[in-house]
Each structure stands twice: as C-alpha cells, then as structure tokens.
Image 1 (cartoon, rainbow, N blue to C red):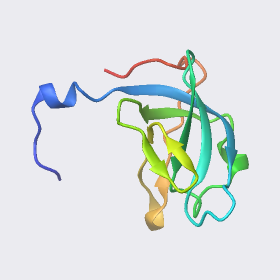
Image 2 (spheres, one colour; image 1 turned 135 degrees about the horizontal axis):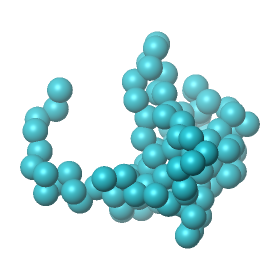
Image 3 (cartoon, rainbow, N blue to C red; image 1 turned 45 degrees about the vertical axis):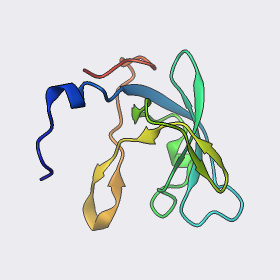
Length: 110
C-alpha cells in the first residue's frame, strides 16, 4: 500500500465519467492507443498505454473513469489530456472498470 494522504490532497483529484467514442493505433506506436473521450461538455484526446491488452474495436462505447485535471502530456503522437483509471487484473492486464448506461458522461466522482 502507498502512504496515507490528507483529504485535502485527495480532494484535488478530479475524476470524471467519459465515454470512448473513437479509438485507434497511432502509426508506429508500440504501446499507446489514441482515444477520443466524450465528457459530455467536451471531447479530449487521451493516449493510454494499453495496446498490449486492448484493441481499438473493443474500447469504443466503453464508459469509464478518467483523471481530468492533470497537466497535458506530450507523447510522440500528440498531446494527451487525461489519464485512464484501471486496476490490476490477471497476468498484469489492466482492467478497465465499465460503468452502466445510467451514469452520465461528465459525472464527477466524489
């Protein structure tokens, strides 16, 4: 386990619901997938290092959780404006937590 943090530190993290509306493999990418994520009020491009475990086709339509208030990060394929939430799965595969249809895009986790 990681060290404890203060509630004030935790409260700074913005986690929102986003739906993957487009997914592709950037030409020459070994690890990254390019994802277009719809947060209800805006769409963002986010690159995720999950190519080893997921194909673009299985990700389109997936609604999940994203950290949305981290600074943009430049990748070799463009700017990434968020971070995917995933948990450890079997054989090291990151498991994406899929949210139900009743959860609206853009909803904030508290």
